[in-house]
Structure formats: structure tokens, C-alpha cells
Length: 292
Image (cartoon, rainbow, N blue to C red; front, top):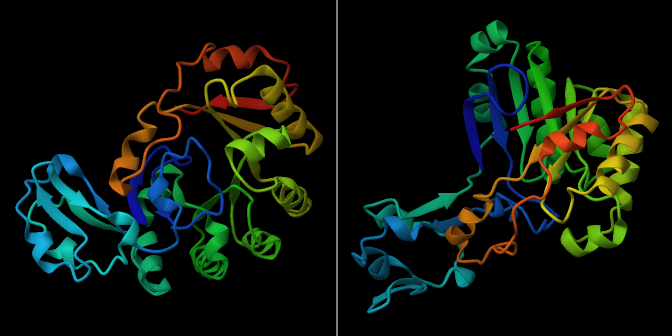
């Protein structure tokens, strides 16, 4: 989906973050809806459109039109051929995601190695969900390890146990999502049964202790004492040393426009408690950090 150089929010030091496309989950608060589909997609930013009509003339499926309402794009029927993207003079249409060979991704991933060495940084693999491209990620991690570069794998744990454990042979650290302890709420706000995710976490812990549990603080959904206490308890039971709390980003819904979709939590209210309040809950010897 993207490769972000000089990232400073995806782990320690200066990092190169590689965002993989495709995710089996459908979190109601997802801040990267363009990462959910594993396929390239044409994204539309209405604010950049000048209604010139060039896309209308080139689209093979006639999915664009310009009328009194402005530019209308039938995105649900688009097969992402990309012809309209090339014709757009204002970058109102962009291609989200592209196929790239491993050698090309590897070369770009390690190109900032000198900055990794001086800052204690490295490469972060995230998504979407990296487990959806397990074979590619396994090979990429192996090649980066040969260069003795620190790597972080960020995952929801929703995917192949075999691939997840293969990542542990090369990854320096895992950022593992903890979303909702209550299975009914999990299914309501996220989708699939969480049993696979918790089983994968247990299997991964048997292989490595280099795991940080991370919780997105979604107002009135995940940011309650019951859920956060369950997070601390799980970290203690697994003998993990660190937990990250991630405050909600209130601009999360902005990207849904790119896909012609409505943000499910558009009416979400402000958080009642500040993240700092959750530091007062009993978390034993676990180090809890608020990552803003």
C-alpha cells in the first residue's frame, strides 16, 4: 500500500514502515479503510477535483460522469484498471496499492540503514494485515535479518498460525493488537470470532517474549476499565513486559471519502476519560505507555 521513510511513530528510532494491503478484519474504527481490500483500488479525493471530465472520456466502463452535482464516480463497479488515474490532471484520482517484487521492496526497505544505525531504528512491517501476505513477509524478514536490522511486525493475529510463527524466526519485536476482550463485542465491532487471534497469541508467546500488546482507545467501545483491566491481566499471565495504549484519532473517518463510503463511527462522542486515567489501574510490573 505504501512505504513510509523516516517514520518516528511506528517503533523506536527512525524507521521505514512498509504497509501491506489486505485485512480480514472490519474494525468499525478502522483509520485505513483503503487497506482492507488486498487488491489495488482507485481512490477519489473530491476536494482536488476540478470536474474537467477527462476521466469521463477514458473510462472503459463509463463509471465517471460530470453533471450539475459535479463529478460522480461509481467506485463499487470499478475494476481498478487505472486509466482514469493517468488522465486526471489534479491527482484527484489515485491508485491505492501496487504489486512490487520482493527485491524492489527489500532494496527500498534497507536504503536508510545508516539512519537506523544512528537512531536505534529499523523496519516496521504493518498493514492492513501482514499475515495475508505471509510467504512474502517471511522472505522479506529473513533478508532484512541477514543485514542485522531491527524489525517490528505489527499484526492483529488474524491469520495463519504457521506464518505468524515463521515471522518469529526473524522479527525482532511484535506489536500485537488487543482490541476487545468481550467476544460478543468483538464480533459486533470487528467481525470474525476472536478465538484464532487469542490462540495465535498463545502460540507466538511460546516462541518469543518480544511482544507488546497494543490497545486502540475507542471512546465508549474499548476505553473502559473492564477492557483495559483484561488487557493488563492478559499481559501479566503471558509474562509480557510492555503494553501500549493508543488514543483515538478523531480524523479517522477522513479516508472513507476516498472509497465513496461512510465512516461507521461518524457520530462517535469524545472520550470521557483521558488515557492517563488508565495508568492508575493496577497493571503490576507491566510498563504501560501512551503512544500519541
